[in-house]
Length: 82
Image (cartoon, rainbow, N blue to C red):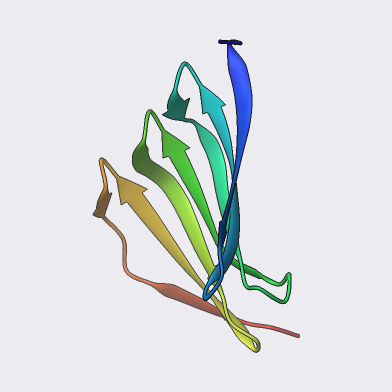
């Protein structure tokens, strides 16, 4: 198996996701898209664990969070789209 691989999954009801795999584990930026192609979630992941920033995209605003060891450690920050 190559050192770095790419995974694509498709869920008929909820869209699809793009993920980088390294050594069989998710590492890097996980992105989930709606079936219409619009970005829903961006999450930083290290060794299959949510670790870093998560951005949840809505039509008129974005929610920013910080995760560590699969636990939300911040208060949600809401940014209104321009």
